[in-house]
Image (tube, rainbow, N blue to C red):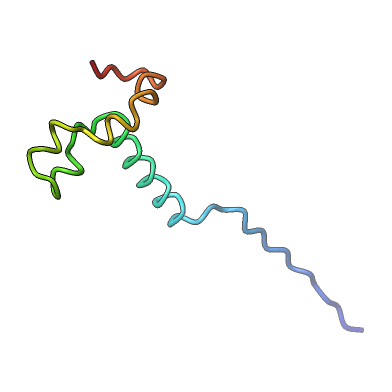
Length: 71
């Protein structure tokens, strides 16, 4: 008589690449909301980006809701 064995392999682990990608998205998002004062657009716009602070203005209310002072 032949016997058959069933092997169950559980793959519930989160891929490390997904964790790294989410960490990068989180870090960039935190920088944009909390610390960007024209730094991102200064590469393209030069010194005028520090005066206009486009991302700061777009995320202004979110900054206050998160507890970051900005003025």
